[in-house]
Length: 237
Image (cartoon, rainbow, N blue to C red; front, side):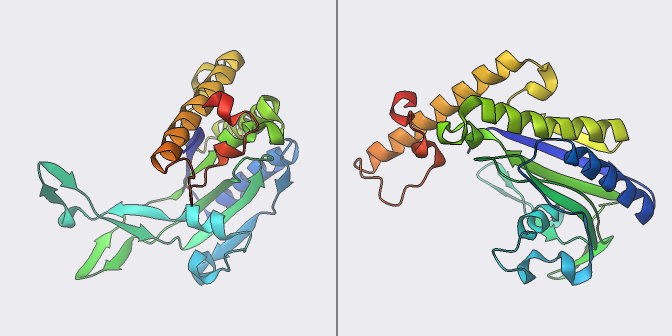
């Protein structure tokens, strides 16, 4: 839970063209205030399988995000008037991408392009993935970069706007497919509104976590939430 930027990329063309796009994005990242920036990686086959990576492997999160979901239409069921859908995770055949960490309290952002198999095997047969061309779908939660211990709202603004700047570049390069910014900055380009939005999110999450703590008898044993690490948590609550 927390304010997040969701985004997807797409491209067509050769491996060379895909690499050119990602290297152009990486060059832009070098000119932005990322706290950490990884190198561009070009992986194929089993190298793309996050399950074969140690939990501390710096590329594991990138490879988790690289996978796509394909709906299994034949396995849909209607229960109590509600349609229950099933999905198959699809591992990419090729990944060209890099990780970039905007700053303290923020999730790492990942940028890349992947190629997927046209067909995958499932129990009882096979299905077409319809995952054509080069594609990428990812997200970056910027919410907790607003933690006062991490620099508060100024740090949040830097992290959030840094990711937005990368998406602006992707749009310029013609490889941006879609953006959903829960802070609405992508759509409005209004800094004051973004500041108000993060304040509202912090208050909402603090109130929700506070109620959970009350339900747990106040002890909140086993309850872990980043918002509780805020110095002003009780005020937000």
